[in-house]
Length: 345
Image 1 (spheres, helix red, strand yellow):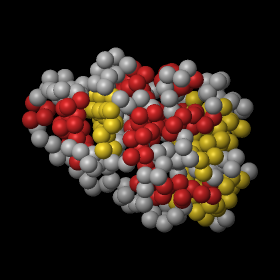
Image 2: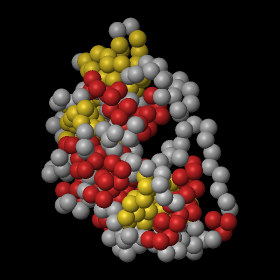
Image 3: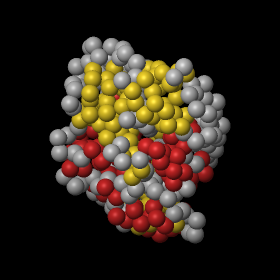
């Protein structure tokens, strides 16, 4: 069995489409036929070489998607052929199989426990969650990373409550998911901070009550004018250390919570004034929004189907697999918030 996949052959170079031979499955592995794959800033960091040296090239990429199970190996009980599934880099229950190796002619192509930039993918059982029957495949593709991380940061890490004020720094796919979750949680005001008008427009459609263009406005002053004394919750979703500092500064004293989601390029460091912590602010990290796929993905799915967690505006542009490099470029340049690869194109 073969699959066409986008392969990172060398960091800093465009991905290459390759016809790969799928190997015999290891116990605990599953073959999924992709319907959609999200494209995340993590793939920009990986493909552009911003995560440091990459010892695994050539390798496959992608870590959120949706698809249909076509084959399962021995020991797999969580899914069966015909199941529609959410694909995610976050581990759930089931076998944890590190990865596989495809054949590309005489070359070997590495793959992690999940990759989604291919028509078919060999995936570890614990990276799959059976979909809610009524959840469309397009929306389901975003649950495994954008929604899990952004919404999870609000629901799980920050444990947002109705009436709490929140500022989200960075209105990309993850940040917009956080804004939508804040709206679902009953937060008010909901402040979106970004430098791109397009993203701020999206933020308003997803529940932001206020927007701040940080390229034109002093963010600290603007937030204080909206939420006097600072916000109850600040979410950082840019991966820029200076924005992490700004998010910490925006939180209120004696109880303000700051959740850092963004991945900074390798080698960058965060320098903060310890006084910010002495003021009683909490600075938290999160691993995928602290989401537990088996518990949280069905919950997120039900919220999406019910219209309470709005992710549809994220899907502004779809691409074919052959246009994967354009999708990466558009994401990096802020042309789109969350590119989606449609395997029917």
